[in-house]
Amino acid sequence: MTISHHPPEDLLADFAAGKLEEAHQLVVGVHVAGCARCARFVQTIEHLAGAALEDVEPVPIAPDAFDRVMSAIHESPPETAAPPAASTTDHDLPPALRRYRIGKRRRVAPGLSLRPIELSGSGQARAFLLRSAPGSRMLEHTHTGTELTLVLEGSFSHEGGRFGPGDFDYGDDEIDHRPVVGDEGPCVCLVAMTGDLRMNGFLGRLIGPFVRL
Amino acid sequence: MIAAIRALEMPIRAEVALPRRVAARLSIGASRGPKAKVDWADLIGRVASDGDREAFKRLFEHFAPRIKGLMLRAGCSPDEAEEIAQNTMIAVWRKAHQFDPATAGAPAWIFTIARNLRIDFFRRRSRAERLQTSSELPDEADQAEAADILISRGQDAARIASAIAQLSAEQSMVVRLSFIEERPHPEIASALGIPLGTVKSRIRLAMNRLRDILDEDA
Image 1 (cartoon, rainbow over the protein chains, first blue to last red):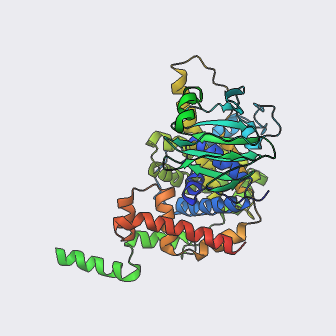
Image 2: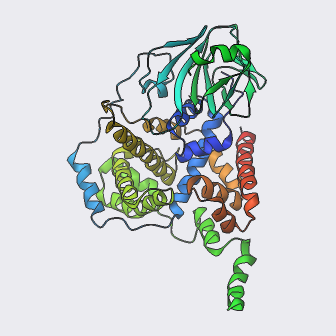
Image 3: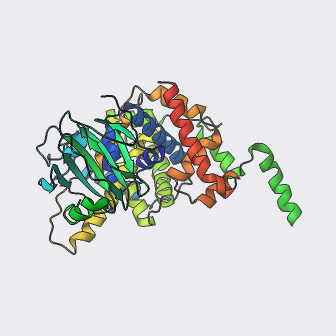
């Protein structure tokens, strides 16, 4: 898997600092788990964070905190590190995704279906798996918010290049694009999206109401 | 009065063009200060192998107040910061056997635990808030654990250390202030003695530089 499109550095740094909202953390996390280059970047930020932790002004902790921590340690036995019950049975999904409950697939347009990923609801963005038929041409669209896309299977291309498995694409309201799905097979993407998609052109306006992504 | 302030400012500016506090923090940040360096990794190892309470107490006394400090900086309330600090230390005890000194520095490892707890904490809170208005069942496992897999990639430790060493003091400080301590840009500008208008570009430069250094070594 040759990855040629990576998340921007500030997104990786926010990921390392734990500042991303859930949907974004999920998409960036799945990319990083499969990309040695970005993993190194994230680890480097984590090391800088370690240095920041060493230097930060210490703030007095509750006087009984140590005793409380010790009794918590002794009260409940150490977790047996049982992995959380797999919420999905899709074994072809990346491990980080298997922890989530993923809803039923629903068709949103011809050749296009999605499965919503259940998040805690703490953020603004939604996450879903988007599956498009090989060779399909997505409608020209713009975003009202931001869209983070990670290719899991297959490929698509647009003005920004070709995006294959592991590639990360960042879209915002300044980008107006029209992706074409590769012929080699269906394209499955993990998507985090804020705002809505705006379909452009006559056909888009026509089917717009049905494309509730 | 003004003269006194000037006199105070002079030696500070002369040194590294950074306020004294930041300059001092920079030198400590390199962890090669004059202070005797405690081997945190060794203490964690003793907790893992013998359940050494004394070793744990030293870790606790050093890190718990710092975790609390960092969480306050990152926008937690004092109660939340206290709870995350305590829970982080409980996790340090329980996960001590997972710590690999060859891959992660102890402070970075402890940071990732605190970070993941903070993420879980906020998610659980928002889930609880949601539950008050809906009938959904709270049955999801904590998700942030997934982030643990990152720090376990060990083969890159040397490369990362060398990348950090190659960053200028200002560059690593700008990354820390903006991403980890989440300081507003005006504060970063005054901490580094640079115009507000250049904070954004300095952050971008530092990010690009870091990426370049890491790519060069590849």
